[in-house]
Length: 228
Image (cartoon, rainbow, N blue to C red; front, side):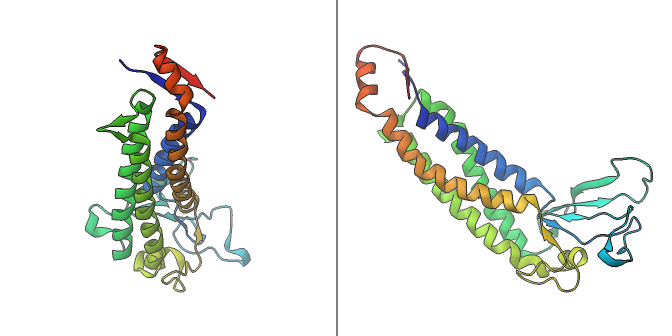
């Protein structure tokens, strides 16, 4: 019989695990990793101090995607084209970004699997005498290492021709040139930090669901156990 055990710590760990997985996935798919220097509608740098004008915009570049102004649209609000610039893995602009894509994809896959399993920890706390919380915590730690490797390698690709086209000739490895970092890069960093927090917090969730009070209520025959 399934005993549904809900504690504050286990519920918080589950919610954080789901949030982290979605945050990393959204960041990975986004084109807002680098925000390019201002350009006019025609695709050239706007003249004048500050480089801005009513018709200027900032193109963005991600690991495999980009957002640019659609030159054929003149009077519509949504005149930006976003999508992958690489039709295959080999067309990703830099070998470092290809490695980044691999490491992030592996890390995100692990996080998504843990997020899925975490939903069922309210009913099943162990498999083959192994605590699901401890196993998931270990997997989250491994995923965090993959994410760190990906984020370390990503700036090494700023010297590729694609980045130079967006960020100017001063762009090089670990130097974004005229570009600024977008929200997706910071989201990926924040998600990585939260991944390790989840890995540590999984131990607290395990302690909460295996406490003496929980065992007493199970022995009393209760199927739904909710503890603070």
